[in-house]
Length: 296
Length: 178
Ligand SMILES: [Zn+2]
Image 1: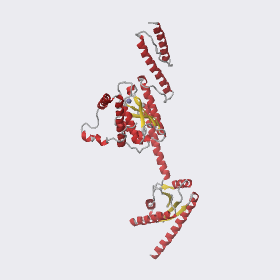
Image 2: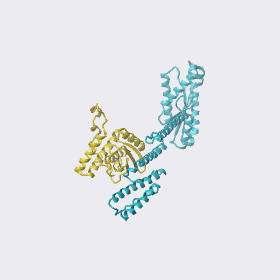
Image 3: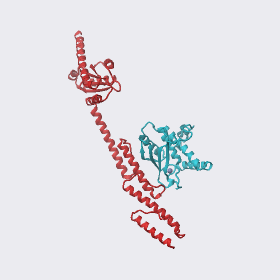
Image 4: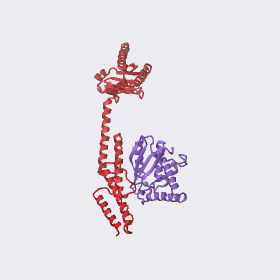
């Protein structure tokens, strides 16, 4: 053993002590060692380098620093790099979940996987429940149409932003009270459902149909002026007649009225005008049917 | 990368034949060793004739065609990128190609880092010090080209053959090739 050997061994011992105390260590790159020691020193350097990188990576992971760059090709780092990779992927998955993707599934982190997947399942159930509540809050349970709350929200939306003119139609089922009193509510309900169907089939995909309550319905025709509203009214009349021809036992009679709003400030007035027109239509139809029954 | 011939190649998905019909008893499955035997002997023959670099390029180009065709024929390219990646992930797992994970995805700049564990090509390979997944690089670039119409540079930065447990690919838009 020469002097260089002795100095090297002392230095190497220090590096090993440092690593054992979790401090940094670095390769010694000795030269001129005796023949037996030189190859050993080179392998020890490679080990020191790997262990130093391992120490840095484990500290980074312990501190949650997932961006830590690791050298390639060190087997010793393999398992920790795999953990780092899993955690990075998990981070990405969590970001996806935050953006609403509830299809993410973890299957590589033991108990944590189960917990994560349970959390996703719970979120999925919660979303379904919320969608159901939202549906219920915006729809009428008897007809499946939108309800008054939705109609009001839609009007508010149009007041803020929309293509004008906008036409509004009020539709009112005639004689519902009498049917309820004389034939029972279940027949009245059937008539309401029938009226809802007749109205629904005459409208376009962008038109909004809502049951405001009882025998009253409302229709929003975005972008429609007076002549387009008249066309829809005529279509509704035809649909009503067709439905009554097909099923004559409980015919439906719907009074209709339209109002056109030329701009957002005019919406409330247009709704009032539609209401008035509907009542005028109702009075007219009543008089006409009175004439008919008197003649009979 | 994009092969010099671009999408002007003659291969069609139907060239793969009707496997159900052709293998009524043996079916779709075969050992990974057979796949690797084909892959690595082909690489060897190509290397012997054209040298390592050209062999790598040819494998990359064939991977590109494979990725493009797989994407066109088995994946829904109308989905948004993240949903598409999730589909790709389950497709690769289903086919036994590997377990793909996304480590990082910058949708603005279109840079991605993905890892593939239990990779069909290289997992368990002896450590040679150089990455060997040329075919995979081309495959990923081909899939993404079919999805987006854009050209991507895909570089394998970690590989089982360089001593790592998963293959890691850095994906960036390839402006040089465009
Ligand atoms: Zn690889």
